[in-house]
Image (cartoon, rainbow, N blue to C red; front, side):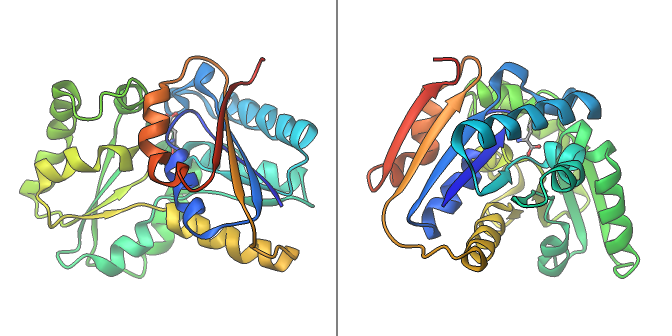
Length: 266
Ligand code: DGL
């Protein structure tokens, strides 16, 4: 089985990490589209074009059987069009975990952190409309985290600037009794420590990597995948990338599998 995964940068590796915990006997081709990161401050059309460029590259050069859009922003902008255009490809997207947040929250006060493009997108609005009609006791505190992805791409995950940014966004949530935060961008699990410092260790953080890994596992089985043997991961990047961060994210698994890091143009 050959699986393509992409994101604007390092964030989607949090999804790859979850995949490596349950998935075997496959080749994973990951694209970190750092040349165009961050996606979250781009237009739908730009994100759609980048998503198609990457999907075409993965199909033509790596003959993928499945495509995981490990990015909430690209899912919001392009998943419908990707599915329509590649009907024979398994296409899995990423959506903010509002539903699990509603089922876990005790206070009913839920924070949603995402990129500006995800929160503005029609897909997010539809998701919220659908869920809020059946959950009137829930209040969502949405925050577009402009600039946070850049901090993470630079590896500044425990930096004072990153802490201050998050503190500004999260303190009002804390004061309103938020007990659950949806990490609506695959980069944000990388600043979980910082979020916990502000919100306290008891805060529920909802990330979607494991749900996506399970979905891939399930659909691959239907495809005839045996889930047996070695897993290899190749990380391609389209411009500069922080190699230390790749090690940090995939590090523990790396010892048990094969990982290569490549510039896509070489
Ligand atoms: N990791 C991405 C997401 O899940 C995109 C971040 C960005 O490039 O703005 O939304």
